[in-house]
Image (tube, rainbow, N blue to C red; front, top):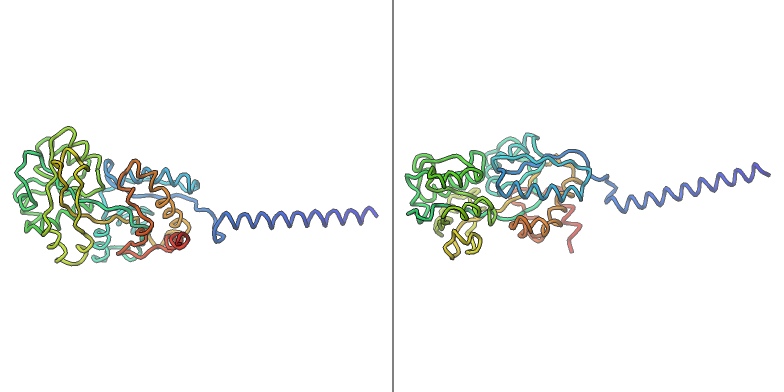
Length: 332
């Protein structure tokens, strides 16, 4: 009799354990979509120059990812800009980055190593071209830069790409028509202040802190990029089609716009990865970018413009499958 009771007790215990495992399995299925484990491991995010918007955005996104994917260790890596960022992705030195759409299109057009492995996760915010001169300068248009010392960005940057295109549209040879100075936003403001530059190009979100701080200690002015300039850039075809006419609002740099909006050119930034990236990780990155927009935007104003309705348009790159999953999951 005791043996029978013992067998019944063991059977009930096993049934209870099995039921508990079923409940646990259901909970795990609910908490981990599609049965995939939560992303983990190490990820390198290539950003930009230390004082630029890419770097600050990367820092705040790293903090947000620490909450959404706590088992992923994020390492930020400074860079010279978009082209170097794309080279790092292609070589495996980085896993995610930010790059301008025109720089991506140029990288693909030139069939650079790994170009066709690149994938988009989100369209972020637009960069605005800013041509900065001392307030006393006689420069009133891009054409007036001929023969002057002009900061054109670092060799691997989207700024350099843009500056060259705009100079060519103004019928100035970027190598011989000016004295080109290869420098980034971390050094160009000081060079202008020290009279080692006559002007410099910058392409970034509004406002860029380095330009804002320069305007507060040294009288500067933003030069309008005349409307016909963008038309000539578009006539060149290719990646030039990713530029659009835009306006720097008068209050973006209150001390540098002379109280008026300034005509300029804008280009979209993309969150980029490769087809080697795990879909669950790409989905988590994309979700975090969208959901942390307001929190990041309080400190990096351009991030406020990240919009779920347009984020999936990552032309010229196809969407990464993980990003596609995210957009499908939030589709009304």
